[in-house]
Image (cartoon, rainbow, N blue to C red; front, side, top):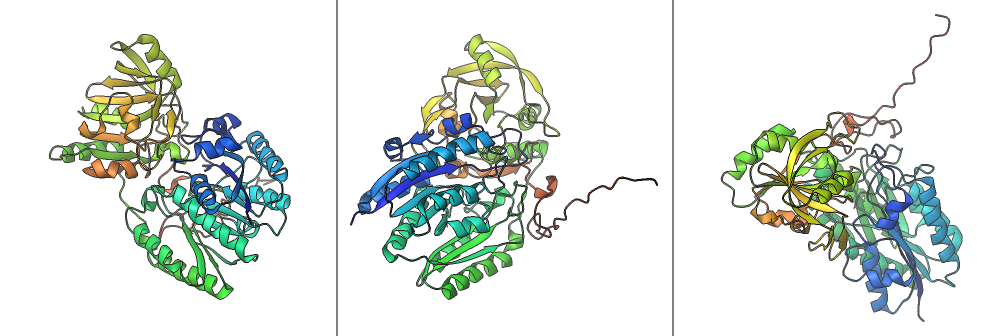
Length: 510
């Protein structure tokens, strides 16, 4: 009998300390992936792109499912999802779900770290409303980002949660496929899996979560090996450490034929993670020192030295517009250097009005509100203009169509800057090439990204450095003004524990 399966997606990674909220307009744009899509648009746009829904759709079509596409949308990471955006999108999704006819299963593409203006647990609320719409007997399966901050409500409302296993996330579509496999099993067995859920007691800095390096590389090998026998699915989510609510933390999920199998798998994975906790630390450099080191390495390098401007990563809530590392490049007289993306629509409009070959005065940076992010004013030569339209070529974005709005390559001395109007993290070599910069020919490349750039840049990099230039995504959680984490969670691997700030009491009559 043909299975009727609904397909939906609603994704956002929320940095509660970031400067810009996720409005409805940001979801319409799509955050570097496909724009808000409805019905059959989802099926037409999924092939060839790297999102969870694409893998689920491909599996479902091969399995002969009758796919019922509802709505899929994502916004680039930022501050809270506005009440208007959340309710508008979710109301439409649920209305479409209620009119989808009898369903055998529901697949949902989620992130796992959505915080809204009115709901700390965005995904918990999404899954609760989906569950209320379809009832307790229809299995609901969701794909999650590896950075999800999973809550008990999410685990209770979904029949299975399956997370990515790579960072850079080159396996988003593959994770959607794995989720669809689990949904198929649930529909066939007619009964839920046993579940095990463990939250871990420390936060992990984003740059050291990369599965290309240790300890995550070995830990994810263990996660994959543990998924065997009576254990149907295992996930390790390293969490998104810039969300100020009680469930911000890494976690482990395990599902099995029996409770004993699921619990044992979760215990085994957690034990190894805790054993490797202190290994989740790495080296980061201040801007001037980072550029000096890059220049020294570049003298004998045959490939570019790549720098991650991690604290202005738009993939983690930054706006890709701080200028600290640009200033450091210029002051160090860096040569054959390129930086991307610097997102400033006003500056982009100014250079388009000036035209190619013209020297213009630009004031960049100083808009984030972050301490140390100062305005940098200088003269730049406009080398090339672009409408911002191109197709990505690397493994993270896949063949996604990009629209960065009016864009340009501007140069100051030996430093070229990719200036754009719409933000997306620099995670694809095509984001240099579309304005005439060949990344492989540069001595130094500065990418406003934390880890995703590694998927396309590690093969061309001499080495990769991490820079702590001022930006909204603090490398160290100790630098963030948390108020609502659970007490005694460690703010860094083997680091200090969180204590809620003490309320000040007014002196009355003393």
